[in-house]
Image (tube, rainbow, N blue to C red; front, side):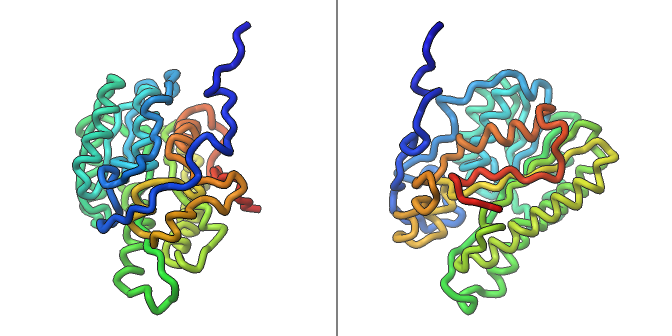
Length: 297
């Protein structure tokens, strides 16, 4: 019998770098192309096994970070994917390349999900392109780090809620008529729904709202055979981090969790696959924590 290879026995403490780059980005929410230390999205490691064969998926914020990792995994598991993103065209085209290399259809749809009409267009475009919707991943998010409540403007508070929680309502409401028994929704919450860091007061509040929205909708739609769950990432290395946090915070990002490093998007993708597939058939209204060991109990 062959022994396990190094990938199957890697020590999680040093599987990835502990200190990310401190290069600051001016653009929010940031782009992959500006990062001098690129995240790992599973481009060279994720191997599918047909868990989502024939499925049609929508991923918001699918151009980069967690969304790109999920798109790659979904495509390699057999799903066609519509990527919703704001205006990061180069990043989105890179994600589409990986989807198409997996032999699946990629649809790119830029636009502002804070606009209810655009959210309706996302659902309508998916039906037009795919004929059905099997998986909806609400992943797009906005955050800013502030040291006091006085630094949080009314406009920033509105933008955080209108990016992180409003589109979830818009998209689920518009999608409902097209979702069949066995369809799934996966929402991205955060460890900050539990941790509630004072510098991320608006962001943390929206992430707690996402969990409650998920739990309520899971109960409401259970009789339809539609499952809704959350993933709660810990500190994950994505373009949002150097774009929204000061350099000193970026330098130590992720080192305060038990595994002493930030996570990579590739380490989250298998959880989204689980929740999107029939392997999680008895899970709805759940939150799966992927926090590097930070306790949520």
